[in-house]
Each structure stands twice: as structure tokens, then as C-alpha cells.
Image (cartoon, rainbow, N blue to C red; front, side):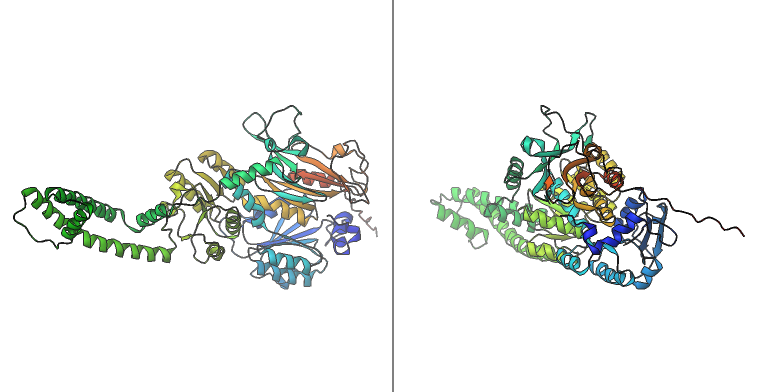
Length: 600
């Protein structure tokens, strides 16, 4: 539930700065500071710098950034400060005193927490937006600071990767005042439960995001919609059935034993053992018939005894029996060393596999997950929660999610996922999907292409930093889904810095839709305007209205209803749409009054 800034002293200073435009060192624009060291810091800075906000922006980064982070100096109007530590001295040099908001998006939770404490010493009256991977620590941080938003880019992006790997809709559920909404296909939802359309085919092979609602008689089952959750609607039941079918299948113990045996033996040794066994069986059968041995037991007795070289030479046998006995004895001499070699090789392979993390037991209908960082660990947990079998790959044995994989009983292969042999050791040929979410774009793309060379029809879900590059890769290489985690998360971080009440982020296609609560301020363009002016297809879709002084949500407001100051519009919007809606709900800044020049 949104909190009235006028009633919340902890937030009044920040909001008043944006509304009143208090000067900051001669500049009436509010000052924002971002601290980070990976792709998210650039994407967030770009989001704020290129969105037309009337703000000043300072970015604090380490002296050396990762090679996949673009040059921040290329962003217009952004001041870059390089520092080894996020301490009080660094924040003072960055001009944090008097700033409106600070975003701490370092990839380390402890570093972010320490930086937040240092920032409070420099500017106590500050809005904090903190990136946290550990959810338990995040809850504690929220209680520690008065005006603080704790967000996780991994938590935002993981559902999209999980859904893409299964070919399903991202399992996004949002709790709003008085109801829960979720994303579903239009065909899986009763028409009366549809709130608004999220995507629709435009007839040109592309998708329109946030289109106008179609006519009641239009048949567009493939559209994605935002629907109301009422008990257990049809869409959730269909999704549940699909997930049940995706659960692990129990294998017959003899099949499992056979696969384990094949994995333990090399191909050449296995062929040699099989040939020797076949020759032994044929020679034993011939010998039994040549000597007129009656009964199964006597046949086995003569065969095995001869195979181990314990039979005596009998010159009185016919030529066929003597030939069979000779072949059987030679085969027996070869069989014993081969069995010994197979046992030794199996034990050695098993120990090497355990030491290197190689999967010795072939898998089938599983999901291969590459990368156990922040996002990969979240994806791993959600896939196992759904009962899916997962094989993980990471370059490091001490990756962030290595202990999680061990706790969940998920095999972890320590190796380079860009190599075909590493993917084959994860049984990529019999897998259901490949999800590549490491932080190295080159490794991710090479792993995806090598997996496709092994199995052309494999579903591949790929993480890439650059959104345009991801789109082009998806089109050029027929990759099922190419996503940028920072692009999915940056809008929510930016909205939190701007004090917008963003309730949730919904990943749709390669876009991130924001569910927001926007208050109408006195003197704004929407003050006294009809509600329909706030609703703009392909940009902003109004889903509810909260009247001034009330907490009750009208989920079917009249578009002709005239808005007044204090009303709150609940909407689903794209990034640019939310920015435009906020500008409509905010009064224009007052022009700066210049003092007249004094004449001598």
C-alpha cells in the first residue's frame, strides 16, 4: 500500500525536493548518485540520463570496471567519480551531501550495506535504493533505514528465465490492494477476469506491448493478459498441469544401472568386452552341442570351466569340439584381463568424475544451467522447486550457487561451458533446454551455438548484456529467448530512486513492464482532467483508481471521471510511459527568478 509522503516524515524531504525544486549548489535539479561495478550501474545510469528527467546524476565506480561494461563517459550529463572504497570521503567528494537519492548496486551485499551506513553519516535525510541478493539480509536492511528500497535484480530476472526454459509464461504474481493479479495467456483466462492486454500480434510478425483491448468477439488466444486471480482460475490450472508433466520421471533401476555402466567404461574397452562375451557364448554353445551335453546346468558348467582354462585336453573329441574348446580357452584368457581392466577403469573414472564434478550418470529430459552466480542461483532454486531435474555448469567450484547445488542434490560440472565436451558431459543431447546465465557474453553465445550443433532443435535461453545485441542474436541464430538482466531490472531501480511507487516488474518479451501507483499532485496537467487522458495504449494502461483520502481501489473506474489532487492512478506502463505519466501528475517546475543587476 502506498504511503502518503505528507504523512510520512521519513520521505517528506525527498519528495519535497522533487516538488519544490530546492537549489543544490546553484542548480535547482535534484541530485542523484549511483554506485556500482557491473552492467547494472551502466544500464541504470543510462536509464536515468536518457529518460529526460530533470536531475543531476553522479556515478561512482571502481578505477577498473569489467570489460563488458560500456564507457560511462559516453552518457550525456553524467559525472563519473572513480574510487577504491565507498566511504564517507568518497561520498563527500561525489557531492552526496544534499542529494535526493542514492542507489547502491554493487554486486556484493556487504559492500552495499557498509556503503549505506557511510552514506547516512554524510546525508541523513536521504532516500536509499539498495541492491541485495540475500533476501533475509534485505528484510533487515529495510528496518534499519527510514527511507529505503531493497531490490534484487536476480529475483526480478529469474522467473523470466525459468518460464522461457519451459516454454511457459513467466510465473509473475503481484499482490495489489484487495486482489492478486498474474500474467497468463488470454485463452487460459475467463474473459471477466481479464484486466488488460499485455501483448498482441500486430499482423506484421511482431508484438505490440500494452495494446488497446480487442473487441469482445475477437479471437486472439495467444495474447498475454494481466488477469485477476480468483481461487484457481483456468490459466493457473493449465500451468499447473504443464508443470506436473515437466516433473522428473522415475527411471527403472536396471536402466539406471546400464547407463551408469556405460558411463564408467570407455567405448573401446566396452566393445572388447562385448566381443569376448559373444565369442565365449558362441563357442560354449558349439561345444555343448558337439559333446551332446544335456541340460542347461551341464552346458554352463562345461562352458565356464573351459573359459577359465581348467578343462583338460581330450584327444578323443571330434574336430568341431576341439576347435570350440580351443577358441573358448583363448577367449577365456582374454576375458579375465578385460574384466579386470573394466573394473579398474570404472573406479578411476568414477573418482576423476567426483573430483572434477563430471556427471557420470547420463540424464534425460533435464535442464542444463550454465552459470551459478546471483541470477543462476535463483533460477536453480526455482527449477528445483518445480520438480525439474537440473545439471549445472560453472567455471569455478566455489561459485555463489555451488553450495546451493550441493544442498539440492544437483550435479555440478566444473568446466568451460563454451567447450562442446563440457556440454556433452552434461548430457546436452538428451536435455530439455539449455539456460545460459553466466556473466560472460562470449561464453554464453559460444555455449549456445555449440549446444545447437549437438542438438539443432534444443530450446536455448540466453543471457546477454546488450539488449540490441540480444535481439539480433535471437533473430540471427534462432535462439529462443535472449535477455539482458540489467535491462529487466534497471527500470525498477530507476523508479525507486525517483520515489515512484513501483509495485512490481513484469517481464514481457524483452521488455520490463512496471506496475505503479502514481499520485496526482496539485497544479499538475492531470489535476482536473478526465482519467482517460492518463490511459494511452502501447504506453500506459490504467487498471485502477484510488480516490483522494480513501484506501479503496476502484478496479473498473469510469474513464470520464475527473481527477483531483490526491487521487492515485494504478497503471501498468512501459519505462517511457511511466515517465510521461509521472510528468503529467507533477506540476511543472517554477522558473528560477534572477535578481536584477545592481547598477553602480
